[in-house]
Structures are given as C-alpha cells and as structure tokens.
Amino acid sequence: MSDSPQEQEIKALGLILLRTGSMLMSNGASTARIRMTIDRIANNFGYDADLFITHRALTLSLSDKDNDHTFSSLKRTDPQGVNFKIVSGISRMSWSVKEQGWSFEQIEKELDRLTSIPHYPRLVLLLLVALAGASFCGLAGGNPLAMCICFAASFIGLFVRQEAHKRHFNIYLCVFFAAFTAAMFAGSFCKLFPNSDLEKAFATSVLFLIPGVPLINSFTDLFDGNILNGMLRIVHGLIIAFMIALGLVCSIAIYKF
Amino acid sequence: MDWIVIVEKSIFGAGAALGFGILFNVPNRTLIYIALLGLTGVCLKNIAIGLNINIILACFIGASVVGLLSMVASKSKHSPPLVFSIPGVIPMVPGIFTYKLMLGMIKLTGETGNNFDTALDDTVSNGLKAIFILMSLAVGVSMPNLIFRKESFHEMTILSRMERKVKFSKRVKRHKRI
View 1 (tube, helix red, strand yellow):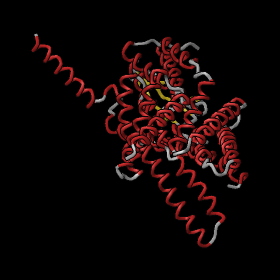
View 2 (cartoon, rainbow over the protein chains, first blue to last red; view 1 turned 45 degrees about the vertical axis):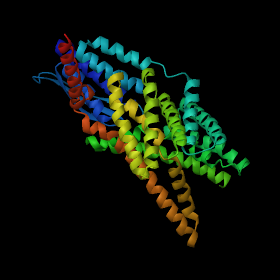
View 3 (cartoon, one colour; view 1 turned 90 degrees about the vertical axis):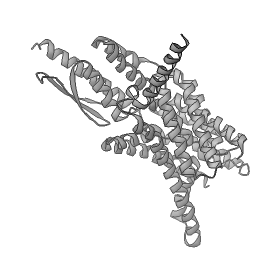
View 4 (cartoon, rainbow over the protein chains, first blue to last red; view 1 turned 135 degrees about the vertical axis):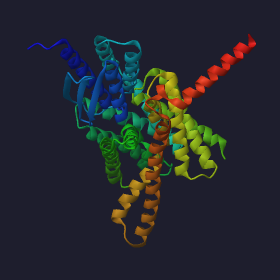
C-alpha cells in the first residue's frame, strides 16, 4: 500500500515530533516546554499538534489546516534521567527550524547528534559531584575534616550508583545503594572519632542524591495547570527522597547513633 | 553580620551548583553562569538571614532572584531557563533540617513520656522548616517564569521592550552626535 505524498509527509513529521517529545520527557524538561516545542515545530510546517503527555508515554495527534490528513500515534517514553544538553539542544533546534526553515532530514540528523553527545568524563563527574558534596557539608557548617569525609563519601556513593545503573537495577534501588554506601562510609568516621564533631558529614553525605529536577519541575507543572504530570513528578521525587532516608536509617540502625 | 562566613558559604554554594550542573550534564558554555547563580543565591540567603529575616523567606528571596537571573542567562546563552535555575537553587536545600526531621521521626517511634514531648517539639519544628524551605525554593524559582513568560523567553514582552528602548535611545544619541 503506497501513501500519497501528503500522507507520507505528515507521518514523517509525526514520528519526528514523537521522538522529540519523548527525548524531552526522559531528559527532564517540564510539560509546558514539551508542548511548546512540539507546537513550534508543527506550526512551522503548517500542522496542528495535539498532545497528551504522561511520564511513560506520549500521544500525538497531528492534522493539517484543512483536516484532510491526520496522523495519530503513541510512543513509549524511556525511564527518567536528566541530561540538560539534550533539553538545551532541542530548544535551540526548534528555533533553528522556525527561523532557518530546516528540513525533516536536518532535524533527524540533529536529534541523532544530540543523542550521541557524550556525558562529561566519568572522573570529572565523580570529582565535581564529590566537590558538591563537600560544599554541602561546608554550607551546613561542617569543619574541614568533615568536608573531606563528605567528599570521599559522595565520590564512593556516586560510583556505587553508576555501577548499579550499569547492572540495570531498579532506579530507586540504585539511589538506596548509593545513600547506604555514602552514609556507611561517613558514619564509620563518626563512630571512630566520636569527639571531633563529624555528625554534619554524616548528615550531608547523601545530599548529592537529592531529586532536584523532579521536585522543581513538579511545581512548574502544577502552576502551569498540568496537575497530573506535577503529581507524577512529585511522587517520583518523594520516592527518591524516601530511598535516601531509608539508606540513612539503615546505617543509623547499624551504627546505633 | 559576619561577612567572612557569608563569603565562605557563597563559595561553597558555587561549588555545589557546579557539581550538580555537571551531574545534570549541562552544556559547557553554561557552567560558569550556573556557578555564579549558586553563589548569588546562597549569598542573598545568608545576607537575608543576617538581617534577621525568617529563614523560609530568606530562601524564597534567594530562589526567586536565582529564577530571575536564570531567565536573563537563558537569553544570552540560548539554553532554557531550567538549565540554570535547577542547579542554581540546589545549594539552598535544607540538608540538616531534613536530617534532623528524619532522626526525630525515628526517635518518636521509641520514646515515651517527657522525652517524647521534647522529641515531638524538635521534630515538628525541624520538619516544618524543612518542608516550607523546600516549597519556598520550588515556588520561588518558578515564580519569575510565571510572571514574565508569555510563550517563551524569546517572545518575552517586558525585557524586550526595555531592550528596544535602550537601543532606541542609543540610536537617538548617535543621531544627535552626527
């Protein structure tokens, strides 16, 4: 069965839009941003796009101005991660589409390029997140020794989380492993040197895991009126927070603080 | 106000924001702005606390300034505002209060009598602070977006109008000079 050129075009655009939307959703963009980006690209080619967005699937219905041709489809969204290079790149791409009139092939190529952009090198990531952990300890008023312990605890914790991710554990379980390891490491120093005021290192050693993106995006969504997605994100964030707490509680129970 | 402590904490704020920027894999060109935003937020929060403003309100002030500056940064660096604002507010997250809340809740399950009352007092006080600070951060950071955004930052009215005025006045001055 061969489609007419118009039908082929609307199908190609629909698949591109679904891919764009699911990339945005799984990399930490807010619902309003996804809707805005997809509308911008679709309107540029002269189509109307209607969207139903949830965190695990994306439904798109695309129609041209006279309603002669329509395209509807559903795409599953990959589990949540955070990659702002992709969110930022797609935002720039949507403006290029609008202002420079990109073709479908160019958009496809840009999306391929964005997915293949590497993360920061692993050692840089580990060291800087450990630096963030140490900074948290400093912000909480910890002494330099506590900051060093927090640095090491965050480093080890993030390492465990990455390894757990590689072995395809449940994402919440990965957080639990990381929190537990970091807290056990920092707690061992508190136990060994009880008089050197290291409790702050123990308390802040798990802060590198805080679910900032889901929690802030959830409020953005709630205020935009996307209440369903806001609640989805807030629950996701709270489960992560609960897992962090569980990791801390386990190590408190072991060390009997 | 103890300025040395404020400077020290601001630097820690920049470090924490930078680390989280790397964790969220932000584009390289935005890293320096993220560090500056983290610094500004923590600095403002601590100055506000030094002026005897309630810590919840202080966090709200810090977060809304970070939200506002992230919109300005997003225009000059061509990235969505959330790329700047989320790592920027993370240094203000109340880690110690949340930790104390959790410890208190564990304590509450075991204590009885007078001990229970003191534990309850501490837990409720710390817990409410933690929850309200978190909420004020989330609301504060998305507030500027809600106030100023029309469709997106590119089509924003107030700032672009100001920009146009500046350009116009420059042009007028040039004409006068000629």
